[in-house]
Image 1 (spheres, chains in turn blue, purple):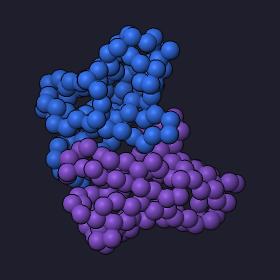
Image 2 (cartoon, one colour):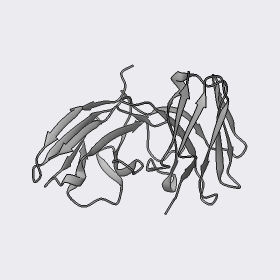
Image 3 (cartoon, rainbow over the protein chains, first blue to last red):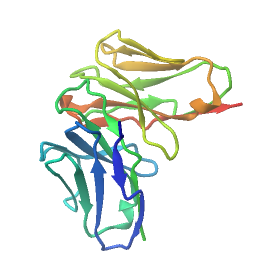
Image 4 (cartoon, each protein chain N blue to C red):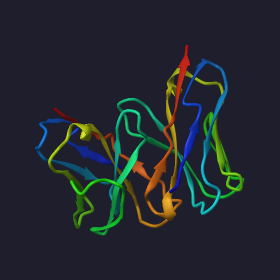
Length: 115
Length: 112
């Protein structure tokens, strides 16, 4: 079955612009999480959605937001882009939420460069 | 705040060597421990999810053990091959949620 699909894979934006990234989960997966990876930092949790509701949020400014649609697809948006937002953004999905033993599957990520 | 640490940060071994690395996590409020293998330009690949103290899991030449009482997990690779070169990440869910807290990874390079 198809894996986690993220689009676009690569993009370049200018400071001050906004960006929207998309994630299509594995079929049947209803939990979608987003992570940011920057050089020198580990994967940092952004937020998690389940059944169109945000369940968890990481320690990021309000410029980072997300949403989930009824088909479980998710988008994240970053407004007023800063140079420091340049990163790999990964989407991760799981069948359900709140079960620690779930295997969580990752997409290949969206590489964002802010110039 | 949950803190997950991995050591060593990087490792170079020769083809055929066996190797292991460590993931440390708080032993209190433990829910699960995830291991991932991440090759450049690919998605992180789930290797194991471990939940019980004393758990041992195996996938081919890769195995992992879990000690929740002392807060560590070991990942072992037997007879390393160049295709094992990758960054190996461990992560633990905060509060039993899908919010994974990751270590910074161990970058393994296997020289032919």
